[in-house]
Length: 399
Ligand code: GLC
Image (cartoon, rainbow, N blue to C red; front, side):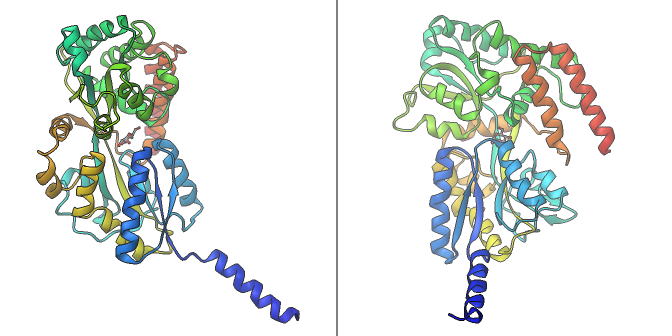
């Protein structure tokens, strides 16, 4: 064949390889959540006649952020749509990586939607609101003669009885990742401290307690600071190997599943406080947004409207046990599921992570030092003073 015939064919082939025909969406989370997204997105494809390619992400918030940032800084058109942790949605908005979205925000709780605005434009829509919770084994509390703990001191005391019986007292997120910032924030605020003034007596009390329940009292697994993230913690509790668990609302539905060994033996409550302190629950959750570099913006907006619609939000509450940011959905389902009442109560004590565009760096400093203390590599006093210094320097640099 003459080269003049072949060249245009090669050109057409290359063009067809690079131009995309489908919308891409990045989804992550637990395996149950990822499977759910597949189901919902299939429904969207059928209803809208739009082809969607799913890009699977890890379940860890930091890994999901790093994966997306790579596409953003390279201005890649993939993924078009993705989910963002409330902890870093601000960074994405301020970095100019998101396309404004036109959507009626009246049905959403005001607090959940406010963080998604910048200069009057809406850049992301909440999909799920998380607040930290305490799961407990109701059968064992009765056996040990303990009440649902109001304070961390009570939780420790009862946990020691569990350790005598060869199960863990308390499992929680202590690995070096975003989840550790949440647990540190909860211990800190519930001791009367905060993340604004890091080097305080209250934070010292909180951090020392976190270390001691692993290293001295041994009510938490020795590898808490190495491997404990949401799913590791959930599985230990679900297999019946722990008395107490700190986790998010999603764990409820999985603990209740037909094949769950604890399905009729557990309860859920707001997290305890320290004696003389106050209750605190880390405010978490996920938002959906559209990349500014997307080449399928109209289709992307349709997907966002679909996922945040009344029907799909209802589905996410019923299917995954999530806490919806939609007022209409929660009015309808909030009373139907026992755990959602507790979630509402816990969310009254919600504390947000610092909503600054450079939050990821603050998070990294906190993760590094808190984890170092749990690992026994640095003393709590020293860790707090270094954390304080590094965070101050960071603030001075940015503000
Ligand atoms: C949950 C929360 C999120 C938090 C993360 C930490 O996914 O919704 O806000 O940052 O857990 O692991």
